[in-house]
Length: 75
Image (cartoon, rainbow, N blue to C red; front, side, top):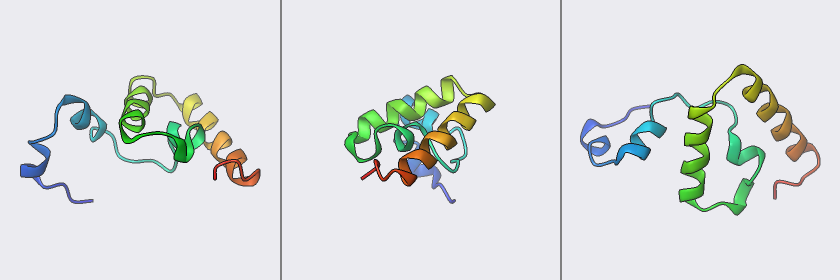
């Protein structure tokens, strides 16, 4: 992924923090809110993930995402 420096310079602190981690295969909003969250809520969830990252959290998110897909509750 290419991030243009001049574009990133216009971001505020929360948005820059969001870019501080590489994207993974799933995230909090995919495992919980799915399509029912605003973009601002999505950013807050991403920052929550960054602040509380652990291998256990990743494991739980993957399981919850798989459950949402298998039970078709993520529509």
